[in-house]
Image (cartoon, rainbow, N blue to C red):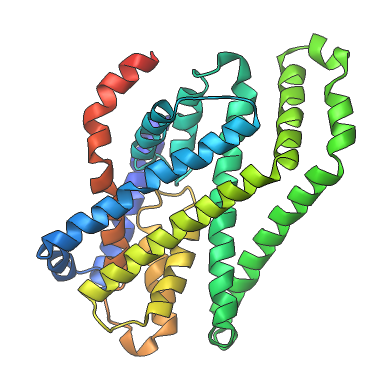
Length: 323
């Protein structure tokens, strides 16, 4: 099937999800207007959303330095900022990572496998940071989760994903020495591109296992990014819905919604995140089942788009430099 047709179908699906949420009154225009009538809050939250890009740039730069790739922060920022804009239109939040890999590979053409792995590892750091933050909240409010079976399921799922990530990290550390010896064999270097790339990937994994301080710093940045996003949701909820949902409910709903955003069914996870946020918020506050919880997450997404508008104006010049 034509790739353009697939993207169109996914856009249509996203619009359909938003329409369903609107019909269920989980998204309401009146709530969006309330935010628009608070211009200073709108500006402040947009600036807060903008800070995601420099933080993600710093995280990616740390991971590239582990690979021995030194880059200019400003150049990296332009790539991260532009790829975030592309990510709004490509399936899931990982669509922008593909664009980032393409642009980033031109910084060091001879180290494409390492740059590709750095982007993958950067995304993993983002997911792990979200899981750490979310599970910390789950354990703080342990009783609320286990009294609700669906929420308990999400907690177990998040814990399982984090356990898998920890297992892979430990595996890389324990087997770093034999993998290093394997990657240094000359016959690997003399073979085709696949074997040379595989050797570089093995060396990159070893580099991460031996540079734990920078990897830990990248994880801390990930936690800060997601904490910032949760704070944004809390402020939006306070402005739009006042006391309709407790702050804990907003934070837990945001955690699940951000995880759902990774599912590549719609561009940028549009509709999916709003649906997940609404469902979890209703589970936590059944008495407020008719409250438009989806408006909170939709407004957060809208503020993210506003923060990326400058990237749209700079895009033609940026792409011209990359070609």
